[in-house]
Image (cartoon, rainbow, N blue to C red; front, side, top):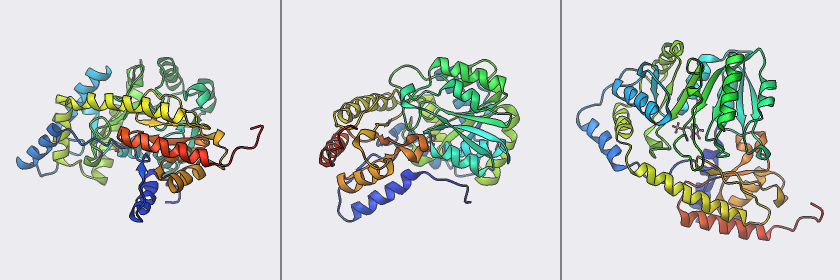
Length: 389
Ligand SMILES: Cc1ncc(COP(=O)(O)O)c(C=O)c1O
């Protein structure tokens, strides 16, 4: 158990709620979930399934209609050719990390993961007994991986490479050149690739492209995606993995051993979400883009803060080194305590996150404006930096 990490967002949320219980007004920019409710047509499909009496177990990998709908959706929207038999439905997308990394990694193996990156990758890699090898994503490289560095990090023990595009926390979208080169490295060095595409529909500039489309990649790629972000369904817990054929039986066995199956009515709601793709989805994406532009502009005007415009997901990752604070964790604590804005330290996502904060803009425009103006006021009260810095 000592090898298992966690997701700090839930701890910060608890701390923010404790301050609220004492009467403080807090703007929540720490947690990564859409503030929109699930589109009503999806809710109705879940309710209808319950009313029809769909209250029983399903096969562990999911109902065939949903697996087919997922395969059709991925083909239509992402150009990825998928056999429904390769799709395993899970309660949320997170378990796909859990199952895939448990299935693939042994003691002594190595797995490369993005830093900064979603904290559960390194947590699960370490939990499996493997060694986690961070792949730095640096602002000066637009948070794209340095591919020469990636080549150097691959050893004879490297078994898995984790990708996440659009990336949490930086919002960076992998370039096509990077995807092609990463695919070449994976083929040459015989790596499995776990590609986390949960933000694949939330792209504002450029295009999301799955590495699963590259030649020779479908047999070594596990594609992770889900309904939490695109369809505002975090609380339903619905995700899936597309697995190369040899992994389907072992991973299905892990599902049987752990959860038996994903809730039946939730699967039915998911099938309706994919087959109808309600118009609310595009409206949410448009709203996220407006919010992104507003928060990037607002934070960019705060002296000591610089904020790139991320191309996807719903996070900004401003650089706060020029504020001259001790570290990112101290900055996030002080912004919560002194300004009433809950954010996450960049280091919640790995050591390369030092000097940054992660703010989720899955919150209303008025709340984002309030947060930015509180941070600006707070920053203006900080002691001036010594000259020469
Ligand atoms: C990069 C990334 N992958 C996966 C997940 C998990 O999504 P789910 O709620 O479907 O388990 C998240 C949630 O924040 C995420 O940020």
